[in-house]
Length: 141
Image (tube, rainbow, N blue to C red; front, side, top):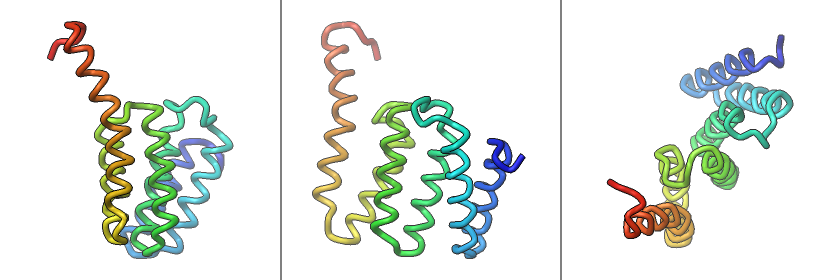
């Protein structure tokens, strides 16, 4: 049906296609439709099953960035980072890629120092925990 997660995946992919074709208004409608459906169909409390919605949030962030809607893009990148960190860990490649996009937006606006230090503190927590385990001999490289 129209609200089934498989259908929503197709709607999300259609949003990506529209974005690639430069049909940004149509892309946003598709992404928003998919996100609303995912939020109804999948519980955000069960984050591993919420990954398709996070992918849609990422798509919206990219779309807003391309439309120069910087504040919207930053909000959606931040939302995606928060969700992916719950599913994976803060130093996961997806989280790093999203933080890089967020930092790039801030750099364009002259806010790079605040974002980098804030995001690096989060990533450093994961590295520090691993370093502590290595020092204690509990984690081998």
